[in-house]
Image (cartoon, rainbow, N blue to C red):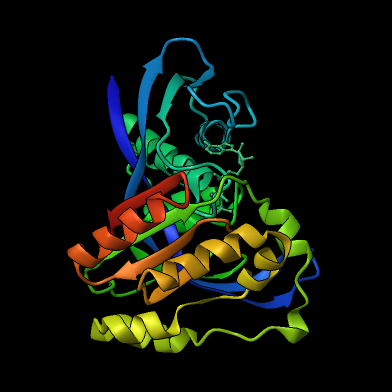
Length: 283
Ligand code: ATP
């Protein structure tokens, strides 16, 4: 039996850090939504009780360090499954980009294995397994648009954003989420207005959404990587309004209401940055 599962990337409409926890992690509030830029996961049952991962990427290991492998392993252990699985990952989402590439692959494996073996496990339970793999995995299990709280494991679905285009530009660097989180000083942060974004989503108010998107990690990443700042300025000069870094970066995105304008911004950015994408919001 073979099945396919789409693993879409996410962007952060907001990323706020509320406090540092005793376990070393941070309490966060993040509004995330999925975009039409996706990896494609193929799952195939195999007779031997093992997990195999194949993919073509210079940056992602295909062994037990792969988050898709970790998800399969956690799933098999939890439900005592003795059948093996081959996971093929066709990567389209840039790696270490702030777009949740590894997390969405892990989430897709959890959803896919549930279908592969017809187990009917509720999404909330898959998300609980996902939380043991990474903070963004629970959101990716649900997809669409949601706010994630706690370490990222408390998920509340939200209204989907007004339909719009997204231009993404990724400078040629990878950012370690861990390193950026280590630099946070919670006391000095200026927090995004999360509830105003939630209102904008409810009202499907494009301009209000753009006015309130915010990410407390942006200043930290911009200070370490000036090229991210340059990309941000360039996007704004190109006429983009809702411009923000996603996750811990370095990808910068811009929300654009009309396709013709999105195309202009995309064309302008392509002369400036090698990896540029023009996609729609899915969430
Ligand atoms: P986030 O926004 O959730 O912080 P990210 O987009 O910044 O994630 P990823 O693309 O998930 O970052 O990659 C982070 C690290 O995870 C890289 O070092 C990569 O090698 C590793 N990794 C493990 N499995 C995967 C996978 N299936 N896809 C991408 N990266 C993976």
